[in-house]
Amino acid sequence: MAQELDLELGLAPHEPWIVKKKITETDLRYGGSVILPKQEFETFIIPQMERGLVENLGNGVEVKVHIVEEGHESNDYTLTLVKCNGSYMLSGGWHNMAKANGYKPNDEIGLMWDK
Image 1 (cartoon, rainbow, N blue to C red):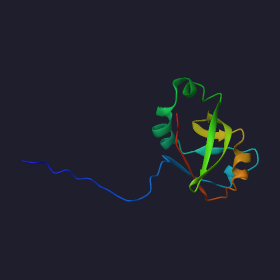
Image 2: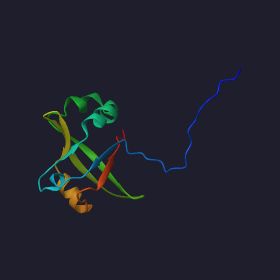
Image 3: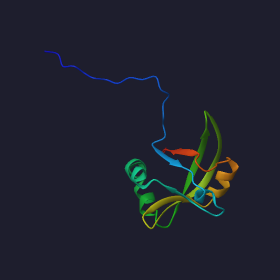
Image 4: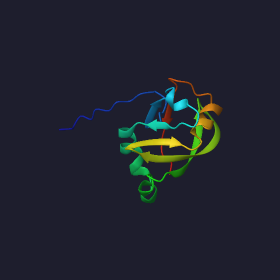
């Protein structure tokens, strides 16, 4: 007897962002950082990172951030990814990047790790 296979298909656009974050007013303060969702970051991003990077998160590691806005690509930025008090955050250039891209409170950003 043949087994039945249940597949779910859809025509929705591909969604590559595995971690999403709504921007807050605190995230946009001058000299500030953006705190990333811990559970999603540890589940989906940390396993993709090289071991040396993960081990140095407490000191902060430089990461290249490539911005894709509604279907078109824009500038690259170098930010610092750091683990501090159990939280993961982007700093060291975050404020300038957010300002340059016109981020406002309640905007949603999506993240993925591209080796």
